[in-house]
Length: 182
Image 1 (cartoon, rainbow, N blue to C red):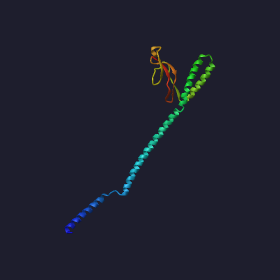
Image 2: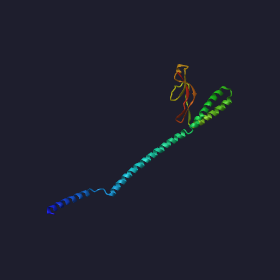
Image 3: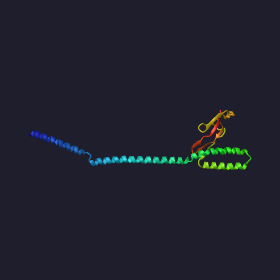
Image 4: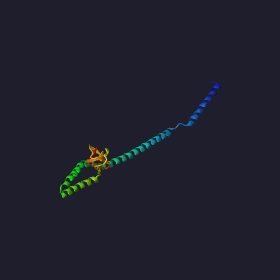
């Protein structure tokens, strides 16, 4: 090899060595650094997942607590609904007994009727106060029939209440059945 070629090779070799030094000065992340970065990102993902699970669990607890409260409010709804015809029968019986002259019978039936109503009221049952002359509202009343109003003032109003309506807690369990005037 000639000196000229040898000098060219040395220059080229020096350039390659300088280039390799520059590349190593940039430093590629080592395996340990890669592992640390990967583990930190996994840790962040798990923290986020844990936080979401915790929030989800808190929402679940609140929802089940609300459902439990509502269940207790209306736990005896079926039993109370089945007792409503008995209340209706007591009201009809009282009307008929008032016509007779037997005061002791009337007092006995009133006593039983009041006690039954008090027990049901303690369980959350309330009567919907609907009376003759009230304005008819389709959201609050159930119209059985519509008859000719005896006076112009009763048009569109309640003429008679056939069955009383009841509320249990905040829920209407039976709408009052009424006759309205046209």
